[in-house]
Image (tube, rainbow, N blue to C red; front, side):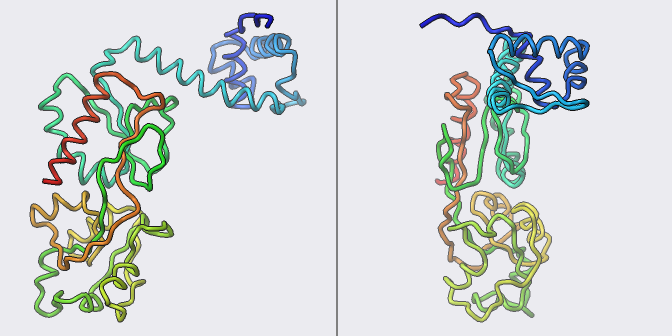
Length: 302
């Protein structure tokens, strides 16, 4: 096979920037060159490849099919290069960026991080929260902790997440509205969170009430919150009864901010997973953090 000529890296950079913005002017601003220089580099790349990458209009440009395919690959490739350069010029062993959902960060991770810092004072963590899937290369994420059904690449289960009702102790002890039986929930506000909406195998109030034999309770009553964390905080404040996800209510139960009025817990198709960057990052800092997560989860099982 005839060897390919070396790729024109400056032209590739110019093309990727222009493809991302669909503007030679914007690409030029980002690269600190002139629009004419961007246009020249893209023409050089097209000549090198022997194919058109842009359809040029009077005041706009559009990607060809070949340009679209190339742009998708280059975006990921340059993100990996930029991340590698960042790592090469920073004290990499001392920095980790962790992505997780708000509820896990607030209710499980944050209360335990002091033990990680005690054992690993040389490591600095940045915790990002959000429900979107992380692009490890683009976002510079080292470890993600996700609540889901699994199927992630380079993942291991952290904890199962059984579901059961929880509420403030004052609510459970109210003599005017006792919570002695599941049917008593008809006298209380049910708090819902969006994590159980339309997800197969994730228990909602309808599933729990049916399993508890409380068919006379309207499972649709009460407000819907956008996150488990918000529904749980509403329960701590005494505004109703919510379905607690076991790992996320452990601390509130332990400290008496919440109580579990009924023993019935339903299995959950969702669990908490530790997801590493594709290719399994083998840096000692990543290994140390993932090992610590598993140790903390194991402590909770004792």
